[in-house]
Amino acid sequence: MSAPEDVISVSAPQPIDDEEDGAATVEVTLRPTEHPTLVATFGYLIRDARVVFPCRLHIGPAPDSPIGDWVRLGAGLIKDLPVARWERAARAAADAHVAGVKAWSWRAAEPGDTQLVAEDIVREMHPGIDPQSGKAAARRWNRLVRLAAVVQEHDAARARGAKSPAGEVAKIRGVEASTVRSWLSQAKQEGITAGTIPLDEFKRRFPGLIEHVVVHGDGSAEDNPAGPVDD
Image (cartoon, rainbow, N blue to C red; front, side, top):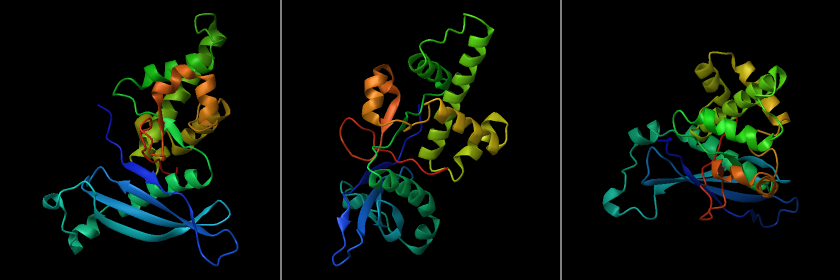
């Protein structure tokens, strides 16, 4: 089965009184996989449609957790909580939300299915490429499938809160992180990178791929709101 993902929701920006430069705050609430009875809420200062820095942090019991499941937040536990990973995921969700873009990524595939999903992506996005039609077409098909697989692996690493998603993919593939970043850049040029185009346009152009997509941050029943982190 695919790895469980943090559940993330983002509030609407709240203007700061007496500030004339558009300053506001936004709250990102994260329910981490490591401690499902806890909720971490990060407050961010935003200005000019940009997340400036985190300004608040609250960690407490999840609203639906019975008192008997509440965790005692002693100094030892607080020291060991992966707050840095949580903040990276929360900041990425805040960045996407504040920019007015509904963040989306490729859904983490079941073990062994990444290649099949990559082929689905290429088949739908590039229907004119037939790998059986000749060597040149086969080379382009194989290249695009590899790029689609790398993007999935990178998205999955981001969703897990990896400090360096590109580095994690590099270890899997036995290459340098710079090579992975080059592949990701090529994938973006080919339109494969998650979020390259707005979600509404994606749904219109590639309806057959929606089942492979996770939408982040707006909390609707249709979406699986798990926040990515930065590369």
